[in-house]
Image (tube, rainbow, N blue to C red; front, side):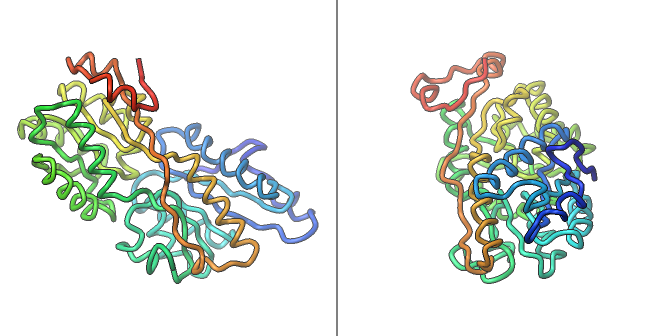
Length: 322
């Protein structure tokens, strides 16, 4: 676990304490990215969005940004470390269950976590009913169905899709069920292949090759986000069109992604933080879902895979990588 350095991301506690009024200490457990520099983008965005509500780093808030690895034990360790130091906790993705387990009475806002009701984080989206609220990742059935539909438009002959899943992911069974349902409607067979760490990737792709899959669908999880480039490279080497939930994997060579607008999610989370600071209980702040998704297609990868993408689909893309 690393703590960011630099004036923008780490402010001496003593300096903040000298400011008048309540200084809110906000722990921010960032998403598991391959480098801290990528995570810093999210840290700066949260700081800027909070400033729009009048919260200035070192004046009336202290943001404690932390970067943990993608494994469950690493995420839990980071939450345990932050909780005694903060008045409010902000966690991404797999940090949600860790916060539920270890945050105690510290109010928590999660960003980009799937199935918060099914995981027991909240009683319902409209009425969380506890000490946690936040921004859900997506309506998984609809979005996974849309991802698979776009993949099938690019690969019209698609019949068998390998599903690269993180078997340590708390959402895993829900993600698989959602994809299975979407696949049935499109006449596609899903073939799950599990990993637990980067060490399992090469063996997983051997299994995928032997399964004679037509394409690869990558589960949305902290581990696959962290391993995005490696997965994209292996998929391309196996001559497999790959569908991702995260844009960085497509920038690294994956074929396509349909990804929530994460900067927009941070803005929504900042609004929820503002409500908590002003006295509203997380129990009474509805969980929100992202309203905008961005389609990214890597045209260079499409050419390498000898795929022709119809102009109508290209016209709907938010970003085309040449």
